[in-house]
Amino acid sequence: MPAWWLDRDSDPAAVREACTFGSHCGPTAGLADGFVQANLVIVPAEHAGLFREFCRRNPRPCPLLEELPPGERLTRVLAGRHVPADLATCLPRYRVWRNGSVAEEVTDLRAMWRDDFCAFLLGCSFSFEQGLEAAGIRMRHTEERKNVPMYITSRPCESAGPFRGNLVVSMRPLLPGDVPRATAITRRFPRVHGAPVHVGEPAALGIADLDRPDFGDAVSLRPGEVPCFWACGVTSQLALQAAALPLAVTHAPVHMFVADLRNEALAEPGQAPAGRRGTTALLIAVLVAVAAMAAGVAWEEWRAGVGGAGGAAAGVAVAGQSLGWRVLWRLFDPTWLRLPAVGAVA
Image (cartoon, rainbow, N blue to C red; front, side, top):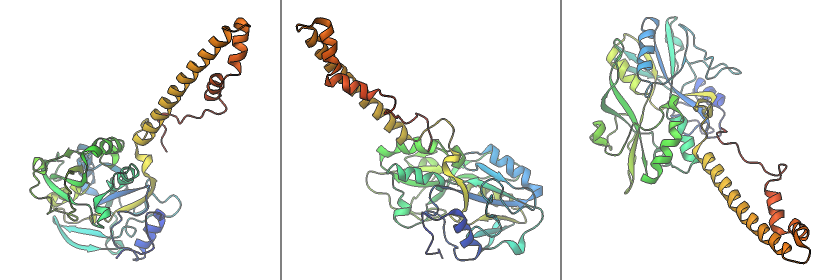
């Protein structure tokens, strides 16, 4: 069950601590906003090289964020700089795989941990959902208090040794007008699946019925909305199923590892969020328009001064006290003007 005190404002270390002590064993969607969430895959060391290669060949569904050496349980990249993050305890729920099938789900791996276990942490789409919601694009599964729906597609992944299988996607319904914005926002995060792999007809991915997801929960698709599909880290679990290893471990779907790293740390450099770029462009356009009008007023006032008895000198004196010139000076006074830098990332 979820811990009642955990919410969007929770610290990642608090979420992991609640998992470690058994207080939280529910989904992690909607917890610790702004922080990276990751898929977990653990395989014996003898299979680690080929699983790493499977991730390299299929970076959209399996973007590798961190790999730990054999036997190591404490993360070094995504968390643990101040409070140790033990991968054997700090996820809410784990799946134990034996010979390609889920044998059980547990909340603690300490009793079964082995010295040859190699842990991999992969990017998760939960990390880009906050950016979508900040842009006013609501997540239907969050509104309906459900798990995001996930589907096995007909698109094969590139295999690596025994690791193979079809692409798994997560689905979020959007209005057609929101699709370009959602694409621009998520494209900035290739290490958490990036832009959608498909928008529109589910049959193009081999999905027969949106009301019957293979993982997660079905959500409502309202009139006028289109389904948008993103690559999903559960693809790695299909690869484990095909590999049929004697023993492997993953997170349970939607029960992720919550990291100390902020989502923006995974954004591609040199790209600002769509909202920041739009605000900057609008501000510049307004300033240019005001400057043009002020310059026009100043010119007319200068001409009026020249036309009087004092000639050009009087024109300059009149213009110097004019509204138009005062507006222009204020606009371009360097002590006042503070434009946000284009390309800056929060």
